[in-house]
Image (cartoon, one colour):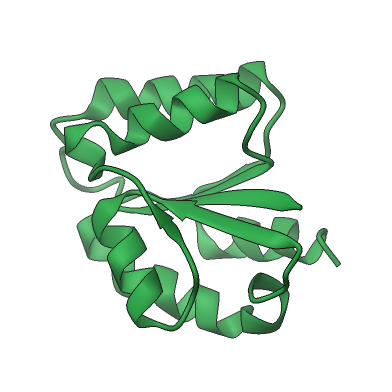
Length: 122
């Protein structure tokens, strides 16, 4: 089973749900487990996906996902970041991105890259 972590900043949550719905066949497979930060997880669940919800990003959800990456429990991260907005939890975001690089975990920060790596699952 592959574990995919999904995160989306507030302005990118609708784009994340649209992306998920465009890849429903792959993501609803019994071979995929989705974990997500709080609100992203709630939106994902409302769109009809089974998801393990962690804390909201600013409350430690990004750090929880980063810890799972360090433990080898995450196979891929899709993180639709809003590069035009300031985020109080920037250190956690950078830590998560750094750990993806350290542990060689694919990280998509936009729909084009996410589409490429998600297609690699089939």
